Structure formats: C-alpha cells, structure tokens
Length: 441
Figure 1 (cartoon, rainbow, N blue to C red):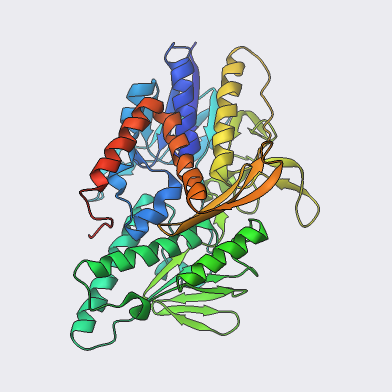
Figure 2 (tube, rainbow, N blue to C red):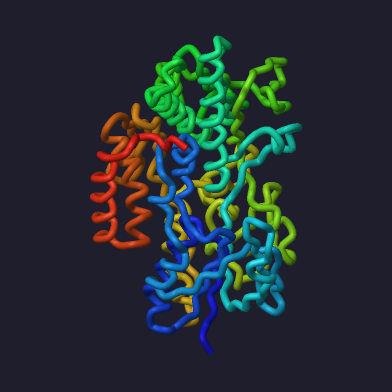
C-alpha cells in the first residue's frame, strides 16, 4: 500500500518540503504526497511588508500551488485544517467559499500515514482592547493588500485636504519593533515619497507624514544582538522615523493608540506587529501537546510528543534548542525564523524517506547563520555567524543587502531550480525599467 504523506501548510517550509519529497519520492510513485493550504497561491512571508507598502507587485512573485504540484509530483488540496482524528489517522479540512459566500468545496477528510503540520504563526495582540477592530496584522497577503489600499486612500484623502487648505497630516503607527515593524517603517518612508512624486506634490512627506514605531521592550529588534538593534535605530532616526521604546500599548482606537505610560499617539493607519502565536486550531488538536502560544511541542526529531506519526515544524512548533537556556533557566526553543523552517524542511525530507525504509528519524540541530534587517532602498544591516566568520560579525550596506536578497533567491531555487530563477530574475530586472517603482492603486 502506498505511504500517504499529508503536509498541512504551504508556507516557505511546507512548500519546500512538498517539492523535495515530490521530486525524490513522488516522481517514482513511492509515496502519495498531499499539500493542504487555505489559499490557492504562495508568497514568501518576509515579502509582505513590501506588498503593504506598495514597493512590490505581489502578482509577479506569487506561486500557484496547483502548478507547483503538477511540476513536482504532489497533490494540492485547497482548505484549512479544522480537526484531527489520530486513531483513524485522518485530518479534517474545512469547506471553502468564494467571494460571494457560496461553497466551493465541502468539508473533507484526508487519510495519512505521516502527517506534517506547518501552518506558521500569526500576530499576537494579547487581547489588547481595540486591536482586532482598528489595527491590521500583516500575517497574510490579503491583509497586506488591505493595508496598501488603505494607505493609498489615506494619501488621496490627505492630498485632497491640502488642496482645500486643510492640514494634510497622515500618521502611521507600527506596534512592535521586530523585523516586520522595522522593515515596514523604512518601506513606508520610501513609498510615501514615491507617491508624492506622482502628482501629489501638495503633500510634503517630511512635514505631512509621520511614521512612529512603538515597542514595549527597552530597545528595537529585542530578539537580535544589541549592536544590530542600535545600528538599525540610528538608520531609522536618520529617516525621521520616530521610535518609542519601553511603551506598552494598552488600547487601540479608530483615532490612535494609548500606552501604559499615558501617552496618546494619533494614527490614521495602525499595524499590529508585536508578538506571535500559532493558530487557535492547534490549541486542542486531538490531545496533541502545545504551549501557551498554541505551538505544538515536538521532540528533537520534530515529532509530536504524543504521536510519532505527527510531525510539526516552523513557527507553529516548539522545538528544543539544546545548549540554550530561557531567562527562567529552562531549555530554549528554536527561534521562529525563516532559516529554521528551511533547515527543518530539508531534514524532514530525509526523515520521511527514512521512514519508508523503517529507519529512525533524524534529530534536528539548529544552525544560526545570523540575522539581516532590510531598510528598503536605504540600507541593510545584519550579523553573520558560522564557521567561516568564527563568531559573529556585523555587516551593512550593499553587501548586507546582497545577502538579504540571496535569502529569497535560495527559497526560489529550492522550489524551481537555478535555471528558472535566473531567467525570472533577468525578466524582472528588464520589467522594472519600464514600470513605476511603486504600486499606485
């Protein structure tokens, strides 16, 4: 009987895993591989802040799951995980609907022998009053597009007000100074100046547009080295982006945010980019063990602690990081980064192939190669780690930007191969010479 592998979640890690398994095992008919995702297309999540700012056209970068499945010998199922039966080894996939609310596909069950859960993470608003109603979280492409539409609308409104002699002030507040908040701030600084250049010259960006980052921790990028944090804040301040640290947001409203210290910061657009948690469906998924932010707890082999047939990786999994401690003294978890998901996908491709032969699963060891933060067209800063660097070295400027761009190219290469990526890159460079550098609608 053919071994059935079901992968739930078509993010960077899940799609890379399905592609690797399809090329290695699906092509030979050794296994039946099914990838499940709630959307029909894939876009690398670290690009969402560019979609939100309008500095990238998402239609040119997204990938159709059905096409990838056809090319790489796996099956794609549109839908969202809503339940699990570990006794019968079946996952429950919810129905899908069109824009008018009509049902496209009904609720279904998918049988598996090996189940891989990699549904990513979402922003954690910590139940802050007003956050869900008045702030946008950039967790999906739909949310990024929604923010961009509101950005254009707010800009047009401010331009119309300036023409009628009214103040044209436009305030944008970004809650959370992790990579998403910091990178979005720089992209917004660039995109608003591009918008002003396309016929909206009544708006003076340095006077009429204010971008503010609010962070509860004592410094920005709290999960990264302090010198990287300091260098990034210096660059943001050069762009006249206001940075407020040590300020916890206690309320979000239609007109701004309130902090614990009593500050009120006006805002026409508010983005929540503070903290992460795994989707709620994992909180009580047929008895699988999870932590306080809904992450499935896994062993070093990426198997669930309560079912060896269920694997989990990426942001939705709490994987131990031996040799590293939490502030409370316990064993730390692997940080939720794209490089970790990429490494785990590569390891699981080997582990699942070994299962077919009856061999034991391989343990995962996280290798930290450093961190990079892009400030759009202005600069990139980061630190590199590894055997070659013999520790950690800080980089910035063009070399850092090249390294940052290479991360996406590595992801594309894992999905398409070097030849296709080279042709795609060349075509994109040619098109950029005939297009505006900003999405205007």
